[in-house]
Length: 524
Image 1 (cartoon, rainbow, N blue to C red):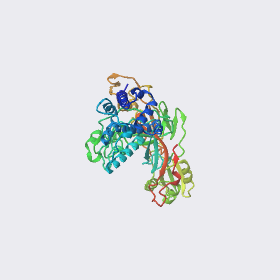
Image 2: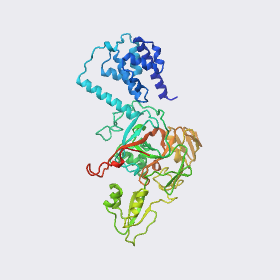
Image 3: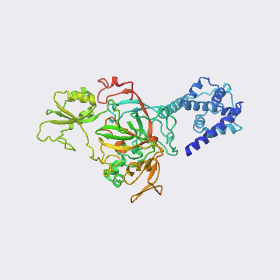
């Protein structure tokens, strides 16, 4: 049993003991506290609040906020009218309620007999603000959270400028690792670049409440960036710390403050939020063959609006911005297209030195490919494809000797599943090393051709957690599991559910800024 569960049980028992004594002081038998449902009924009678409050008590997660209000009303019955006293009762009920219950000097006062406490304007505003912050924090932590699409990695399924709601209750909300934090800030205080928005005095282990569903293949999921445990304060999540070390060497990354800033660590819940499509769930075998994803050797269903990069050969000139905008190409992609003058590529597919054709490159969905083909100046549209057997050293597991993989031909790779045992050796340890060391907290050493886990020679390993494989729908322009590997279950934030607003960053407020056709849509 984890220390978190033990502490939770201890705090619950102490809180119940405190309520028992307080019920007795209110002239009710203390044992009522132990009777489910009836205990809340009597509690409402003690504080003399309407019985319709009971509806909020039985609504999951809303009940947390309701019980906090009931605690405040209960301590008022013991003449605790100060804001500090009420805050302590909510934050530390396991300490404060037993104190009120066992202290003979603290007596119960019927709410109808309480003197009218006139609050100052400052106190009125303070109560309102605290109420709003607590309510919003509970909703944001346990129910639903707003999120904005910052990059094009999910286009065209989700667009830059989409505002969406992420359901925490779908997969079950997780307890924050760092509950002491500045409200509504993620990892950095507002108006600062590097100042932490959280305190690590309390660092809770991973615990997830039950959800009403499990992650399925093709779900769009928000999660904490797995490579974000260590961060360059200059690059943040724009470049993985581990990628920077592979490219520049560890000594350079740690010593060159001008280029990389400070190197800091972040707890799981304060790592950047990423959004991708879940391609593989625990136990799956994922493989990509010529851009097509296969799950357990079966061709996977492709998202409706997924896209790849295509080479577009014209009769000499580039396509106009107006034409591309009319088709639905973003200004960012148009700008990149206009910069290109290609006369060959890494795999020698083209030899245009003696031709007058022009090649540009665009990420396109299948329907937009057909629209581009119909343009008069377009001679051909051909997809980019990295051939099988050509290695990309930037891709996980960063071993081009044993794994000659690239973004279009990748795998097969087995997705770790809790309780499943795999054979490990010197050739495949690169796939599982980060799981074993970083995510599951073991000490791993390699001596010669032998692997030692926690000092013991090991040829197998049994996973403690489930893991997932995430990819963006913009398949050639997405930093995803192909670049940094598995996503542990304790990194899962929630399910992307509903887009309520969509703004086009390339347009003015009165020039089509709001994408009306993209509003109020469910995500699939």
